[in-house]
Image (spheres, rainbow, N blue to C red):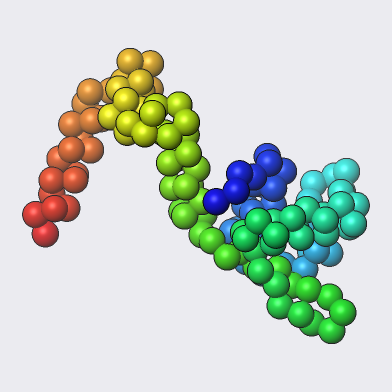
Length: 121
């Protein structure tokens, strides 16, 4: 999956939160100062070219909708980070979180317990 810019990610979050949208609706949902219609239209078409959104035609306008879920995007992004910075080692990533005190050993034990309980079902 092709990487997204910060602004493209924000647009995807808009689609995930609100569902299918016309560009004019995205403009209306945007904070002030509102982006120009043509700017957003170009960005949405870039998302479509990258395979993140599709569209339905309504006369001479398009309604865009997400092709991937937020969960799919998150997993893909996490996988890219693990690959790039931890040499594909999920254990290395978790170790770094523990070392940086971003996750405690008790949290890890709870996670292990939860996984073991789910696997017993």
